Image (cartoon, rainbow over all chains, first blue to last red; front, side):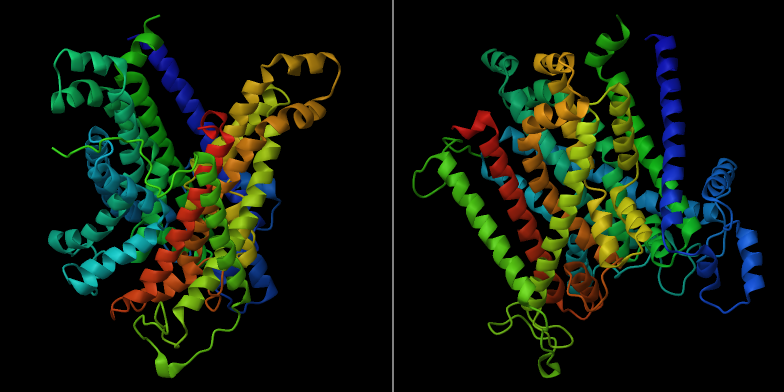
Length: 329
Length: 284
């Protein structure tokens, strides 16, 4: 592979990343600046203070300067990794985010893998047996789950497994009264099962539908007809001609779903009161914690960008068909 | 292995009609159901509270059961769906206008096209739910915040489609001919490009609806926007969270299921309209 081209590719991606991040940072900052939230009031929680004290606070937070200057300060601070102090947690935003993001990452990574594997398998089975009852069941399930609100699915799961069967605790990352660092692995893991299950159940619909449609298309192509006439059939046929063709685009699609994954995590963490980044984002939004919310927006944008980048890489560098066209001419 | 059906293409309808008639019937039925939900939701204003019959299981008298204040959940659900449909409608109109403007704007020149692509990228780079929260906070929350939050963020898929469509139309000869005749860009965009993308717009709007409704429910569930006494689906579901552990499954199950059905109905309409508008499948 041509090294220069690869370097150019990543250089271009890096430039894009920086431009996009600056745009996201400015955009979200301007939106929140236009909002009726007064950061000083949010900090004071409505406590009565004299006008001079308020002015001192405004001076301290830098809220009484014109908008371009505020944006400039925000970008400079962002560059140094200083996202400010969270108003809810009274801790640096960056610490809060790292803390919560790790918890979410476990949830998201697990359900991402699960939904990918199960979704792909279901899609292959449905596509191979097109028109059979199993195909219909998979199709109905996918349509239904794509139209169902993810938090409602979470509530159903919670009702079935926690309330009626009583297999799992109703929520929270760790038992009440135990510090998160003191919780045992089992305690922590049992509380991860239901959110992961829900997020996987919701997330597998697109990948299943995609795999199913692609597989049926491949199986009706001429080269499969030829392979059939040579005597290949059954699982071997699907494995050699179907999966080889579909697996990579499916992985790419799965990487592109990072945005939905994050959105799903926000809703599902809320239902299961799982102490992750999504729940923190909602709390920050509801309680006017502007620094924390801005920080989460920036982090989530980075997260989505990484997903898209990985999708791009898997598309350009792993797929043998693209490689030949793009880099060997 | 699993047996295949003899003929995949055989329809499961009882009587034989051509596809166009069937599609129209399906669209008509779905629209009637949605309109009836919307209109009856509009007229349900004050749901009587009756503490004597609080927390009842679903029965013939109360189809979806009753909540902790003895209010009939069926009425609340219908009212909530009506509200959701209204929010979805306004949001779709706002989103459609934005995507049409951006789509036509991208036809002006290469720079405009890049600007539109950049805006689409920017909106696509933040997870959708966070973006909605961001916009609704900017508008100060409340019903207005929710409508704007949902409306200002759903235009990206349609705008993307329109942009690529416009790009293709721009290569046609009559556009360059028109340019050579000295027509200005706005005139060309409105007279030559706009009529060609109308069918895309119609399909895009209908397919936008279910997303808008779902996101409206999601954001009110999280607690942004609508006040707790308003019977929005998200509010109803958030409230029923408190009663989950006491086994009141009907409080959450039926409202969510009805939301799912409404969303499915919109999907159904969208797919069938697309079938009618797409010249490849319209004449089957």
